[in-house]
Length: 91
Image (tube, rainbow, N blue to C red; front, side, top):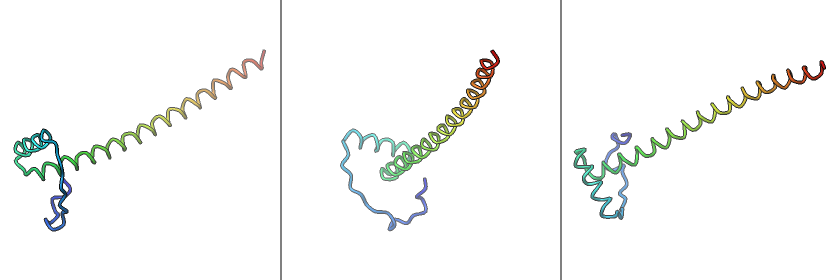
């Protein structure tokens, strides 16, 4: 977790209205992880942002890979076009 070094005075209280079932899930998870409900909520929220950042980075890598493949295909097609053109011009 990124926020362990913050003082309690650096944290802003936030009132939440949670469905009873979700509150129970958080309560049970906090108990299982031996931490407060607040710490459980903060940990899970922080993890969701990390997952989103990782997903976006992966998406950018994938986009760059696809662009690279498109460039390779373009070059291969250009070569094939030139070969076909030369073959037809010889006839």
